[in-house]
Image (tube, rainbow over all chains, first blue to last red; front, side, top):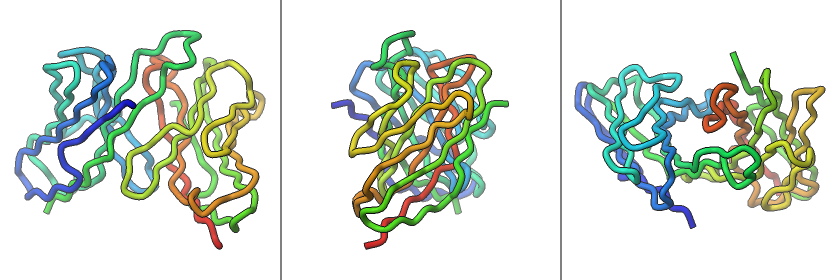
Length: 118
Length: 114
């Protein structure tokens, strides 16, 4: 079974702190994603990585950065946490999509980290 | 811009009744479509996906969805609801410029009444 793990289920930080959220996957997936989940907004992509050291900004990258030094690990960094970054953060991984390969494109999700910034 | 809409942020059904969760999408290229489910305090897991094979797709736990190109819809159904189906359901469409990425809808919370 694919396993995606996230370093914390719950995290409370103070405004201005630097916050690290860690994600590890054990399926040798090239793609990794960080999403933010808010009620009524669904999941919004923060950053996408398609290989080690490779990254793309998603829809809401402001205030966030990422690091991918190893294939299995993808870190989300809040440089200076703010209250509007209080949210549920979900990490996911997948193989690159291959046309006609019905087993591809599925994203596997971690359990999420609920971050509260006070 | 591409989008996914899910009609009804909250749906309640009686146990044993039909479940119908609606999803409409926009895409100018042939889409790949997905339904994910999120149980309380868990991440998302794939229910089913449409990737240009059969238009009627069967998934796990008795769910199925039908791709209708003319209606740009991908509604999720289950003939008979179980209490264990209570969860948040998300529809997603592949991004036109990169099929590795998807856009999620806002989600529909399903309640099952005994």
